[in-house]
Length: 329
Image 1 (tube, rainbow, N blue to C red):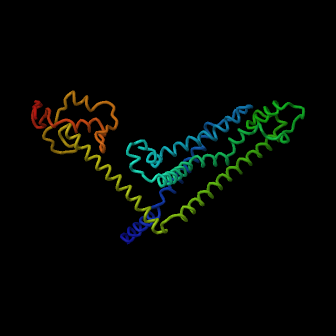
Image 2: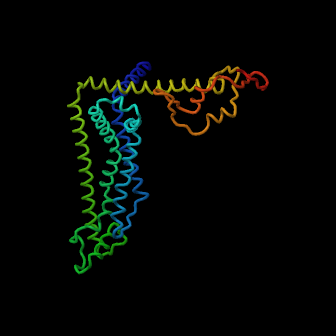
Image 3: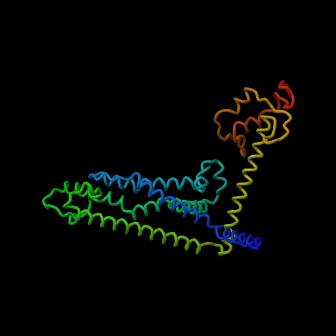
């Protein structure tokens, strides 16, 4: 019975992993949206306080509405690896030799850029939608521009005085008692407008995303199953490439580190170590950039450059003897 339960649990786990495979983008977007909603609520609770002053409400409300969305958009671009793949090395002299078909390259760049933008827009659109549905920022920003018929007061009052009183409506403690009803009507009107705008934004985004996926599927040269296979292949290829990159770079770097110190890091039986000279320490210290050594190769670091130039000699010390330095050529 216990063995059968373990088998059922294993099958359930495999089914769940199979279901999640290929949906990493959807899951990531959902997590980003949830974090954005939570961050917006905390941000509003701890930092937002309408100034309730003519000329300042609009700037303050729009700043809280738009600036975080702009920051989230930039962060979305910066955290996407495709952004850096798209822009890195575009000024390289080899770039013109590797992309002979300019039209195809432009189409590919546009496609990748649209994909990056779609991912980057998740957080800012979520922020805008949630803040509009909440309504506080919108009420603060446009309260002083409400039509005059919502304001029950002396018709002889000046326009500047009317705007001053309307600008104070988001702050209930600043509103005279005789204007409480007018304030409530204005706040309800503005919240209605803000929430309608928020839901319209959500509807437009959902419809746009759905139609974009439909059009992309219609113009895809692959069938449904072939497309799933291709998606799995690209995902697995990237994982294997990252593993190979890590192992290859470690092995390559290990050769240079061994040449400098005289032993392989992690070795259990180290018989002797190399004592670098002051000149060698200076040669590998400091700031370094990629250094082109020929038409096809670069030195990746100062240690890499030193290891390729210097011969294997210097002072060595046996680890099982007294620390008397000897020279080996």
